Each structure stands twice: as C-alpha cells, then as structure tokens.
Length: 378
Image 1 (tube, rainbow, N blue to C red):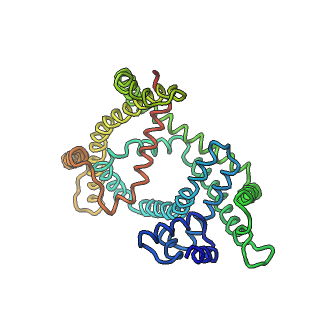
Image 2 (cartoon, rainbow, N blue to C red):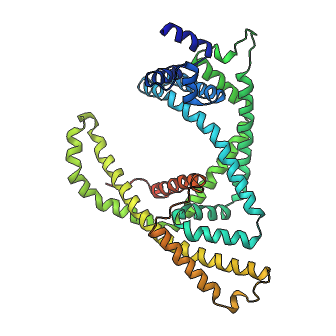
Image 3 (cartoon, rainbow, N blue to C red):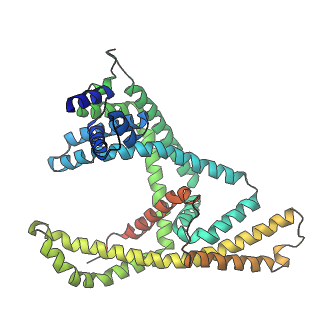
C-alpha cells in the first residue's frame, strides 16, 4: 500500500526524487522494492546519498531564488542531484586516467614517444586541431604557472570535500540521526555555505582562479590570432545568411511568438545565423587541419622511427643521407588524410571513451574562439 511504501522510504532515508524513481520503476515492472528501485537509479549507497544531498542543496537555493526562477530551479533539483553524483564518481577516475597515461607517455624513450605522437597526429590530428594548438599555446603562455594554480585549487577542493564529509557525519545531539538529515533544505544551504567560508582560504583561491582565468584568456588570444581567418569566415557566412533567414524564418517566427516576446526574434535569428556560419567555417578548417596534421604527423613518425632503428643499429643511415623517411612520411600522410577525410577518422572502440573529453574540449574551444568578438551584427 502507499502507507507501507512511505514507511519503507522513511526508514531508507529516501528523498522525493527517489520516491518518484521507485514509483516509475514499480509501474514499469523493473523493481519490486524501494531499495531496489533507488539502486537502479543511483547505484551504490554513497552515490544515492550524494545525489540526495545535491538535490536538497538545489531545492534550498530555489527557496531563496526570485519567484520567476524558483520553480525552474526546484524542477531541476532531481537532475542536478543525479548529474552531480555521476560527475563526482567519474571525474576523479577520468583525472587519474589521464594522469597515468601522461606519466606512461613521459616514461617512454624520446623517439618512441615522438613516433606515437606523430602517428596520432597523422591519423586523428584533424579531429582536434584547436586542442593541439591550445596545448602548444599553454606551454608558451605560462603553462607551469597555470599548473601551479590548478594544483592550489585542487588542494582547497580536496580540503573542502574532507570537511564536507565530516560535516555530513556529525551527530551533535547524539540521537542516532546525523544533523544534516534533521534540518530543512534552506538550513542545509546556509550550513554548507558557512562550511565553505570556514574551510577555504579566500586569498589563495581568488589568486588561483585569477591566474587560471588569465592563462585561459592568453590561450584564447593565441588561438584567436591563429584562427583569425576561420572566425572571420564564420562571421561573413553568418552575415550573408542573415537577410535570407529574416525573409524565410522571420515571418513564421513572428507569427508564432507572443507580442511581448517578439523583440527576441531578431537577436535569435542573429545567433542562429552565427551558429550556422561557425559550423560551416570550422568544418572547412577541419579539412585544412587534417591535411596539415597528416603531413606533419607522417614525417614526424617516420623520422622518429628511423632514429629508433639507428639506436637499435638496424640501419646506419641518417635522415639527411636518405629519402626513405620522406617516402614513408608522405605515404603515412596520404593514409592519414584518406582515413580522416574519406573514412571519417572513426576512433577505435577502446580509444573512443578515453578521448571523449578531448572532443568536448575541442567543441568548447570552437565556441569560445568564435564568440570572442561577440554575436554577429544584424
């Protein structure tokens, strides 16, 4: 019965989102108990607790938000809880994985690492031209200082996470129920904000954030300079598409838009045209980047391989005494360009999950570089 289910939920300490998840799972036949249904949604007990905590914090923020925004924040609370719990689980795993891969790469012999890097550029460099350029700009615009600021910020976040875990376990009245479970959402938000203020060092954190932001702007400026033609092309395409969009889409958009909101139609068309221009311009730039990365990567890999053969005393000729490295390099470049332009440069199944953050970074950099000058003019 509903009363029985409610009592079970109360004992399990489940939240509103968990109760809704159970109801949906019970109706669909995917679960038979509240615990089983919640487990299917969130996984381990730690994940469920973290999701519930983030949901309560979001709901508490909605109580202090303006009336027009409160209802939307409240509706988003379950999604924020679930997404936040997932990110807290997979975030450290991804960070550690990339750290271990970089450490393994640094342990390789110089020529072997160079050869692998060249092969990666040759066959997949066209997918990540901005990310590669950003890495180069990162090294040239104070990368070590940015790494120091990131490390400082990480230390403060780790310190805050430990303090938060201890706060979640506190039971000062010793009644067997932790204190955070006995306060409402608004009090929970105030308690966690106070914990942040007591734990972190504002001077150190503000300096670290400022240093990272300055470094990020430096990288963006370098990318903007390097890809000035691409961004100019994106703006030109957007400006050229604007009159046609106004004639084809404008009347229909105005007819279905309430009078009070029609002032937003014109800016929306500007943004739409800009996005179309960005998509076309960066697609063309990807073709150019594919050719460039194929040539550079192929020659880099062939010359590094020749150096390894010299070290192993398999051959006794240098790159200046033979054209073999050029022949192999150009052949690799042709294969790489064919694979990227014709075959689409599909990543192997084992490698694809490892590189999805790089793809996300690439798309983010495209938007950042293109929008650095602001929206296209009307």
